[in-house]
Length: 313
Ligand SMILES: [Ca+2]
Image (tube, rainbow, N blue to C red):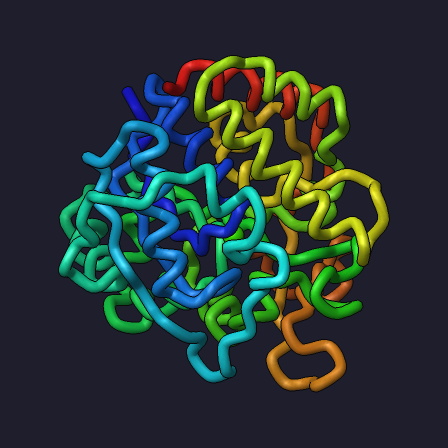
């Protein structure tokens, strides 16, 4: 039986790769819908990019919804310098012809989860947690319908990326993250500790480019462009594939290892707002609320990604 998933996303280059990987796993995953959120880019661009990715993959049948246009309390801070319509990334994805769904993304989450049996739908969070937190505030009973919520976000032993303390997705909407972690939903966290271990290298990009299909070519070009954009700031270490790690975890959890721990989000301090405080050693006495991953088999990840993307158009 295929695992039904909903992907909440802010595409975003690595989001695009993650969504393609989900589409490429048609035997295992049934994508019920994509819900766009403001994050890497403003909502008007993330919902359009979500539709562009569907069309690239030949999946205009997948409904795309627009969710929240800004975080719950904080003003929106984007990462347009990395994910914007510059250079080749703008050229490779076709303009969408499929329509955006009329229903608000948060209401889609509520309606779809309400209609589901208990603990049946897996949620994939690839951006700030605004939509999911809003849905849980509006309809707390949906928590019981979620089998697992896999979140790309946070950092433990690894430092932050948008500030020294905080990872981007959590930092954009720390209040939403705090609501989600406090909701009782079974959360698996794929933090920077993991995603910084799955770096692009010239041979890994060459393998994607060599697939010979349009999706493989698009992914190779997107990742090359991403790496070029970040090189001036971070050097040429290779790009971390943050969001695809969520889908890879669903497909092959044996690639990942972690621990059940308590994770709390800092929402007050100007210095460390958005920091995920990970009680790795269990010193606080707070109940574990997260399966926090901290290691990954990077070669296994790239083998999986490359093999799966070969199945797309
Ligand atoms: Ca993302």
